[in-house]
Amino acid sequence: HGCPGGEDGEVAANGSGGGSRDFRKPSRQSYQEAETAFRDLLVELEITSSSRWSKCRDKLSRDPRYKAIDRSARDAVFKAYVASVEEEEKAAREKRRAKEKREVEAQQRLAKAGEAAAQRREKAARQDAESNFKTLLVEMVRGSDPKWSDWWPRLQKDVQGRATNPALKASEAEAMFRDHCVHLAATAEKDFKALCGELLRPLLPADRREALPPALIDFRDAEDALGEDRRFGAAPRDSRERIWRRWVMEAIEERDDPSIAAARREREARDRARAAQSARELAAGGRAPRARGPESAVDAAGSNITDRAYQREYLQAPDAKRVRRD
Image (tube, rainbow, N blue to C red):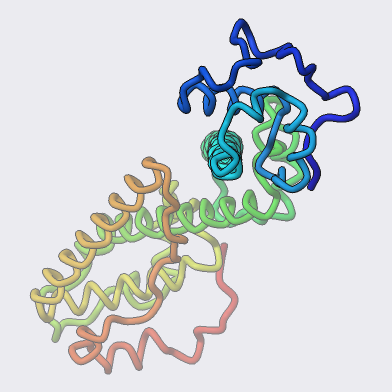
């Protein structure tokens, strides 16, 4: 590394650049003044941390301030000055790096904030789309056995665009439709069981030794008793006899062992509590678990008390495959 400056960097011997000091009489200057003047010379020649004494000595020697300082101190002052410049340059580099780091971190925070805001907007748009589509399902889909392939084209014609919202995928819409259908089926089954309880339970003999009436043995007779009520027609056609058979079995179980009825009521209360909790979680922004269809298997607790003779003779009769009246 050479000494900064070029051919034009020479300082005149008359002390130009040295202020008002008279360097023609170095013997009158104190050592401190001479050292200060020599440092000023180093500043004027723009000595840097990469400058070397061997390269700069000739140029420095042309200035009276070079000669004003003791020969033994020149090299030491030069090295000390170069070291101080190096420290300043190092501090400047660190300051620059710290500034660049802060700028990068600020940009990263800004980018993350933008991503988070975009995610919040996307989530809000999806929740709005799901809520609006659920409202559309409640308004339009009320049948006992709806099919997605039949209803999807009709739902897409909604003038409010609730089925064609870009924030709602077709697969998500189908999943919500099927959940809605499960809910419809569960509600229809619940209402159908309530209808059986209102019209058929009074027909159940209190004494198990008494014969059962026809409406509790043959579904065709039960249809005659239940068919005029709207809840009968709201139940899925293919599930009516199954629901009726299940209700008859449960009614007999409860008659023969009242504890079964109490256990069933407790279970239904727990199911309602879970459903309410799921609804609250969904309203809070979570996702409710996929709804399950109505139970079709007999409770294990009640299977040991079921009137097996009745089940074998009436509920599993060979004519179960007969054509039912709709």
